Image 1: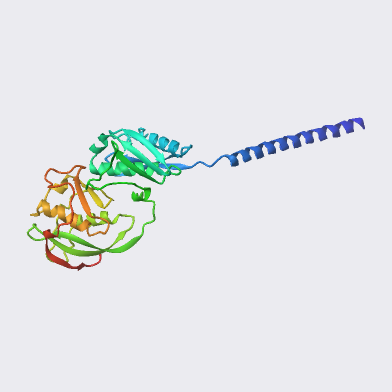
Image 2: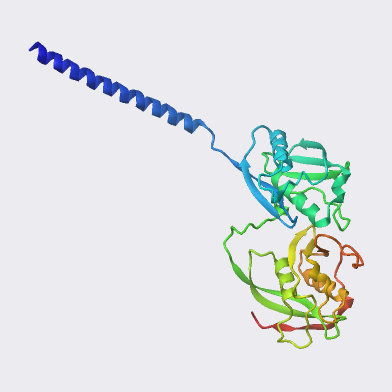
Length: 324
């Protein structure tokens, strides 16, 4: 009888120990789970870098910095100035200029650059500006920002005041949006038969809205007239490659490769230039155009920034080309 009781006691003790272990494990798991719930979920920021050829912006994600608005801005500036892990990209704050000062008050951020900033080419400066603005305005509480150069207001390539900037002024399509197509009717300018004037014609076509309309217009000029309307001739060398197209403050910056300087047929350089300029300035958001070749303003150009020149147009616009 005593042996039986001792056996029961041993079994009861083992069961109690097991139950205690399970209870402790459960409590430990519960505490761990509670601790995880109390930890804030990680947030990410998109840091904007320049592509190696300085024709576009590339995005890398980092953990969002902590602290107040100014502390976050300074951390984001460290990201923008550090050498990226992928050397195919360039840091916007490591382009040869220095930041002299940073001021923040009531949602407004001001960066003061030294005069080396003015040595950036027109397209590179716009990309650097876009990368800085899009990155720094992710700091909590910062709603707008301004760039000064040696304490003076920044002017764009057309001599206009840049002023305060917000993130939505610099739209970037990384291709993640769903492709949608819509029909558009644009007015394009091609060369006449003698190559010394322009002829205007409307073109109706479906295009992907993931493509900026200004890029679509330049693509269509390079593709040339369809041949269905008499009197229209190619105005730009069809082998020309587009390196970048972007619009800011009413100025469209178009960067071609060197093929742009090689005339097609008997077309003059002036006709080639204003074929692009007149076509782009038909868009309501574009008032001036700057054309660059490999990121530089060619010596053969009479000026840096162009506006529409209707004196180059010799005939009234033609009827629309058939849908394509």
